[in-house]
Structure formats: structure tokens, C-alpha cells
Image (cartoon, rainbow, N blue to C red; front, side, top):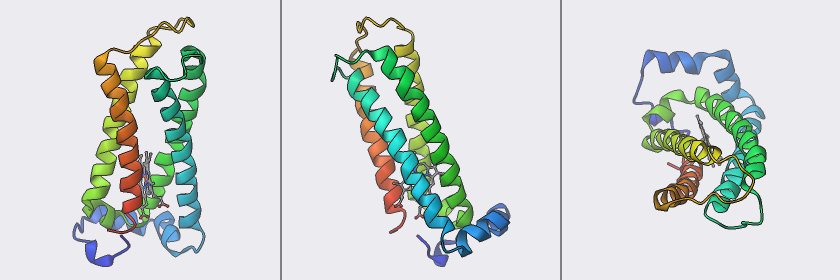
Length: 167
Ligand code: HEM
């Protein structure tokens, strides 16, 4: 990815972004980019870990765990993790904005993130509409497809993020 030849989209705004002091520091500091990337991975662990637990529970795995308390614990962890991922991802973006915008993989990754956030919000609103602790909530066929797509989609985002370093 760190290939100057990919800078085909020489938009002034992207050049300006890459000249920001923070963007320069991200490129020139020995430790900054790897540290931010480490925090990106920590955020991914928090996000995917909590999403996976919730999704499995929604699919009916681990019914002994009450859904409402699980939602109360997992959703705030997901949200904070997502904020960390978005912040650190944006910092890395600053450093090589032109290359990332020119990379279809990066564009697909961000599009997937948007779709998956929408999917998660729809699933959450539906489950949160049943706030009892009786564990009676069951997903219908469409909901189960949404949950399966959620797990698969977040895995794709992880894969696309990793592949960015190689293409
Ligand atoms: C929300 C906005 C996000 C932005 C702007 C963003 C941006 C980035 C950038 C710029 C990189 C660096 C690629 C490189 O240096 O080659 C990266 C790496 C990565 N991202 Fe994201 N990302 C975001 C969200 C996510 C999410 C939600 C996930 C997964 C759930 C994810 C998974 C990854 C992975 C696995 C890597 C590779 C890390 C490594 O190999 O060290 N990203 N991301």
C-alpha cells in the first residue's frame, strides 16, 4: 500500500490532508504509526468480540445468558471500541490519504463498515424493543440472515483492512 505510484487521485484536499502536521508525524515518526495501528487492532478486538457474542446469542447459542444484561454490557463496549477504531483508522488515513482514496479495497472497506453499522442499528432497535429479561426474544428468518451477514461482513472488513498492507 505504501506505494507512491498509487497517488493517482491528486485532489488538492487530499494533498492538504497529507501535509497536516499530524499526517507528517504519522509518516515520519518511528513509533507513531505502529502504535496507532496497535490501538486500531485493540479496537477491532473489542468491536468484533462483542458483536460476535451478541450475534451468537441472537442466533440462539448460549440461551442461558439473559439477552438484556448481555446487551447492556456488550453494546457500550462495542460503541467505545468502534470510536477507537474510527479514530485510529482516520489517523492512519491522514498519513496516506491519496493512496487510500485511490484503493478500491479501502473504499469497499469503508462502505462495508457503513452497511454493517446500519445493520447493527436495525438489529439492536428490534431486540431493544423487547426489554424483558425473560429470554423469550426470538429472531425471525430475516433477522437470522442479518445476524449471519453481520458476522461474515465484519470478518470481511478485518480481511480487507489486513490486505490493505499488501495491495
Ligand atoms: C471506521 C473507519 C475505519 C477507518 C477509517 C480505517 C482505516 C484503516 C487504515 C488507514 C488502515 C491502515 C492500512 C495500512 O496501513 O496498510 C487500517 C488497517 C486495518 N483495519 Fe481499519 N479502518 C476503519 C475501521 C475498521 C474496522 C471496523 C475494522 C474491523 C472490524 C478494521 C480492520 C482493520 C485491520 C484488520 C487492519 C490491518 C491492521 C494491521 O494489519 O496491522 N478497520 N484501517
